[in-house]
Image (cartoon, rainbow, N blue to C red; front, side):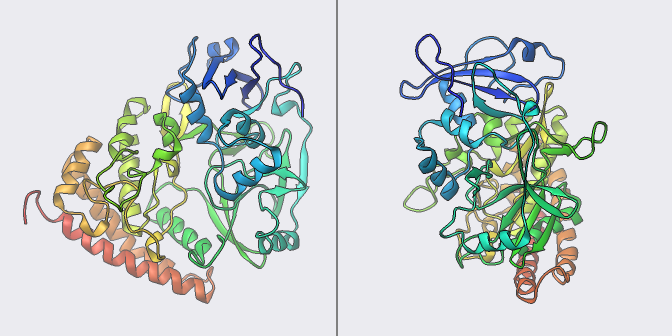
Length: 448
């Protein structure tokens, strides 16, 4: 790896780039918790540029170290992949800038990070790297994840995405899977079944919930199940796009950021109660909830449309029993004029497993779907800035639709017999939650 330029005070410098141009320089000192961040003049004045986040506006001047640190931390993987990368590269977990250089060459969104060297090359200037991913080898690596880290292939890191679950960034070339680098970008995310028995058949679970969302009209990422023969979920990236105008084989990056980044928050605060719901912490709602999510509407290009996307996402996650719908599982497209919600992703029924039942964000004052009452709908509408009748109409329409379509999708031949047993169980649980929420919607606020 090239040696970073040392600036006047002996501090290293990294840079943020799109596929073809420099965006910003970051001079950092993690021990002193200091950081000098500045957009390039060309980027600030370009008609199609955009800020890294609403908390890093396109203007001259410096940004606080915390803002830069938290923005980068939100890009980094978590769990075993991050720990293994830190060990291999001898990195401190506290050094988010160094972590970004090693782990965020092709992160979510359009902006990657690299060392600021004397002869900087942006991704488009680098030679293409293509590594075929044969089915037999993929199957073996899935089975041996306990001893061979899944994120590393030929000593190269291919998991520049946030989250704990094992995943790979791959390019789909026809029906063939490839690992790519250099000037090439991935087009899909490959997700095998999680380790252990506690969340068995998660691939079918997510495929079913995503398919149900699409069927009832929610914008979601495209998904398919492949068997190698182990089941893997192939998710088409909405932050990548084929270059129809230029060359169809080229995958381009699309600017996005998640809700934690949009709010300028540390990933610790992705749950509304980040300290948990036991031991007297239930009322410590210090993280990101729906009130904070809706406050982003001042950055939305079309405020009402953006708010309604959050409303439908919240209602659907309640209906399917997704207790893990936190702020890092909601993303936005970026533009110079503002942000707008991106398609939904990571939609799963967590309630079908022996996991926490409390929702990541309270609906009104309720953290359990079973506790939602009419007054919670009123509180939620006040946070969303919409009429109560509008929420009730959306809830009735969505609950009715999922009740109608879930049993049909659960019979799909795309699932094995054991997977079908699981998704039918999910469909039955959806029926129960839908009936409860429809009853709540029929009750006037304040009525017993």
